[in-house]
Image 1 (cartoon, rainbow, N blue to C red):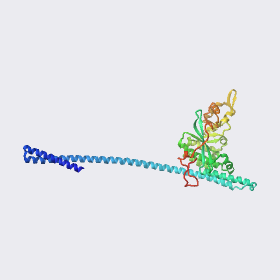
Image 2: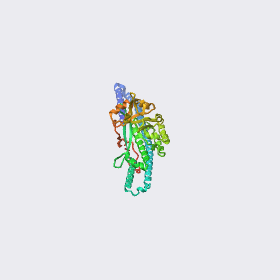
Image 3: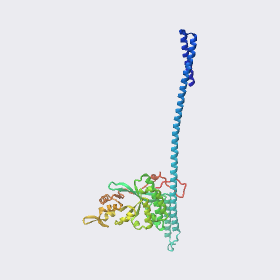
Image 4: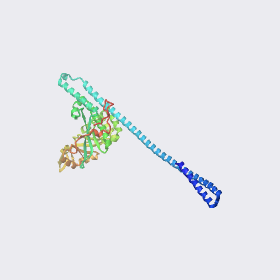
Length: 421
């Protein structure tokens, strides 16, 4: 294209020079003037052509430079994007590595707990039968049934067949859910739910109640941790037994896991029965203090005596007390024209919740079954309620936790991951 342009320009210069030369010759200039005009015109034209060619070359060079600069910008932009992707992939790999280590630690801890329970079961089975029962066929049958049930419990725990049921705790009078109470349930291989009364009947004689408590607590915290990632605004009450608090081999590992998940402190509230709390020993009290130092709170339930030692509750970081609505209303009595509680006749009934608040303890009326109870509870200035009236315990479905990834089933490292239910 450029050569064609130059050829056309040269033809144009020649034509122009001829026209000038012919004009001079016809006007009487003669052949000499015409030839001189032709030569001079061609020289001027070619000089002018040189200027035009340089201008064209400079323009082309500037275009090439601009194109190179644009290509460089595009290359730099692509390199920045590639660097960002590589950095993101590196962070993802690091996170996955950390998560894999975390899951590995959890699986190892779970394996240890199941192994300890298996050891206790084996010890129980190897214990010689008393002579009085050695020939008793009925007793042998019961022993075999107990052994089978214990195996079912062990398999349910090791195979992730642990369901977490949640029951709402609501703020009154709005009835907005602000907490949940959790209940752990086991399922056998057919999917049938095993109630605590069923497996405790054989677990207590075998001495594995503490092992089951530890496993259920560990499972509960695992699931709560995954739920808390979805909504940290809701607290969940999780039962903890004195056996778990006093287990010198389990609790240090459990405490280490919680210290690595200290952000759960706002979402997890450990619940203890009143009788167990009152009978706690120095080891349990010390371990409760360690949990409190991490920011975890405690709740007291199964209350039968309303005359609470509030200073002791405050020292132990107990922030909630659950009292049955039926017990609260049964305690109401009229004395000298005012409503009081039989356990605390010197205190007006409506001031009981306020007294607890002064010690940093919130009162929750549980087992609320009817609307009439709600009216009476509100008159006692109680801020929270729990019971079937506000919602029954419901199991968390496996799909809710499928994204979080549960540890693989124990005993089969190559098994596909399944969600804890």
